[in-house]
Image (cartoon, rainbow, N blue to C red):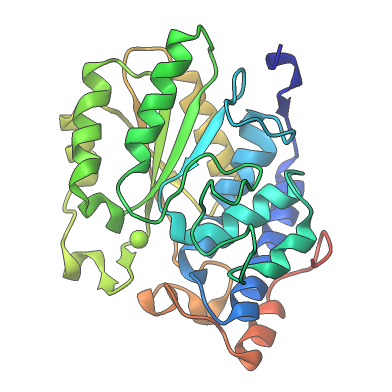
Length: 289
Ligand SMILES: [Mg+2]
């Protein structure tokens, strides 16, 4: 009975870009508001999450934890919570005014998502990196057992792939033919302490995932047309015996010129002048919270 309630929001590319501009404004304002948080990865993944929730996924903002009959999304790199919360709010999961409480005491909108606060749209705690792929696999297997033909999506940082649990999950999913799962890796080449190549190189990610038995796709994560096309193509490739991974190239800090292309804005809040400079580059399209 839930299947009829799930919603496919089919916004056009210009409409999706408008949503993304507002989400980027929310991100820098949220992180500025509490002088804490992770703007870089949030800005880089804005187009992806906007496309997912406003075009690609069939989902129901009248939130149920079970998610039967819906496409599901699990944010594994939980520190990019600002983009996740903003997209959920604009998609109708909760009122956008709550974004003003980001990282404040007793807020449901915590620095890293948890289920304890019962924020609609959040189905796992994340922030301890490396766990979300295993959760996604479990949810995807549950859908198969329940005869639920919807798809499970996960998102991971590239630095997150240095976690060992990722590769246990990467081995498990093809063996068990978890072919209703689309994992995306945010390949921005950066992690909190520096470029991934300097911290612990990932070398050839396509070769690694292919060798583990995944159907590997690539995508420009800051080109809305490409994001929508590749995500829909990926959905079309489910049910063919292999889990799917999308290697998504993004720019950390994308959309704000002085935050782009460096790990330096991974976990740093803008000051008042920097906030003003960032907002001058991001059109207010849906109204600030
Ligand atoms: Mg990264």
